[in-house]
Image (tube, rainbow, N blue to C red; front, top):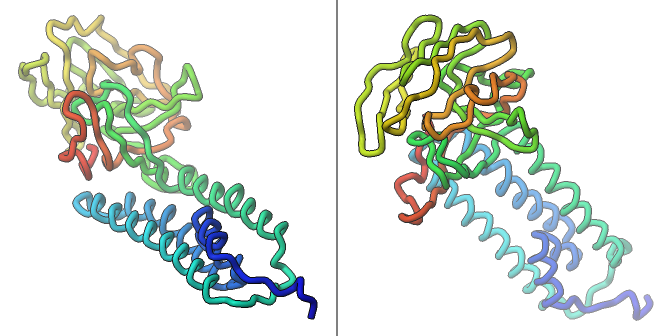
Length: 304
């Protein structure tokens, strides 16, 4: 046995490797089985685990569950670093295995960080759930500027999932700039007859308006359809523009913002292809904005 094949493991190196990637320090220590399990647990807990929480837990449990999942993920990461340090420090002599080479470490690091984790994150964002920050006031009072919400991507998909319905708050690709996503409420579907006049909206000759009342910032209108209700606001005084009447073309949806005086929507850029609707807004998991700062009461708020 050559002297060059026997090396002492260095605790600082093991610690730094585990900091860079959970399980990487265990790989450095020669514990390949533990390294695989630590990496898998970290990846599954921090990515698909958050998606399951966002999609399936009741709104009242979402924020506590996210906090617990974050603590568990950080705890697993810290455990991996401490364990790598401890094992490296206990090993006086270490017989290197044939695969324990710097090139193998570099390859594993690149495969995990540049391939495995990005593919997992991409799959979840594309097919399960994605997070969006709301930059404008166009959907107030339902969705506030500064809200960060989960949107279900198991929505309006060819392979199944929830179908687009009137009253849904949808995320879609902006027709005039396909690098941007907009959030609006679906008012009408293909074949529906839509009429907008003043502060009132009709779909198939049935009014959406339930109630109308003045408030501090203008006029608040309660709209609803098929057992669902939501609130929209208009600035006052507001002429609401010229009356609009159209039939929604095949494969299209008519969308409006809930803050009707501050929203760019179908009234401005036309109907939206159903194929461009990529998600349904579900729940707020973080919210902040001037002048109040953090909006604690918004955490876990169900978007309807």
